[in-house]
Image 1 (cartoon, rainbow, N blue to C red):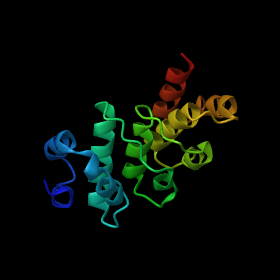
Image 2: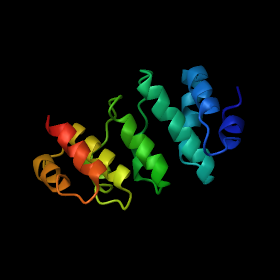
Image 3: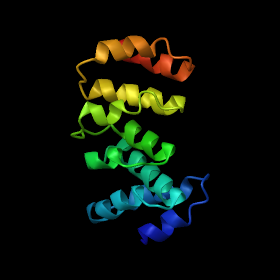
Image 4: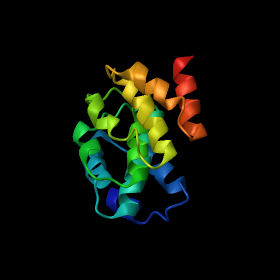
Length: 148
């Protein structure tokens, strides 16, 4: 399997090849996958983060380095990394996630809220209350799901 070639060939829409790649990923491939998530090529980074999220959702438990969330990343990469936190324990200070609570994309805000609370932020109750008043329904829904 040529990880980089598969990621670079992604069309930006169909996920069949990415799903197959996630099923073939080995532990030795993980450093290359993390590197690809930080790629300057937006499409490659988006594909790699999708694969990482799919692996974690499938129970592979691939904890990524906290520094990945401190980089400037495409919003979809951030979204995939934040969504992965519901499946895998990553040692990330809540402050790294907190910077995405006011992101312009509602789905990023929603999943930043989820991750922020999972990471045990001290001001979680205040942030959760504020999220219940967010103009985006997706953020309010995530806040409701976190309170039940």
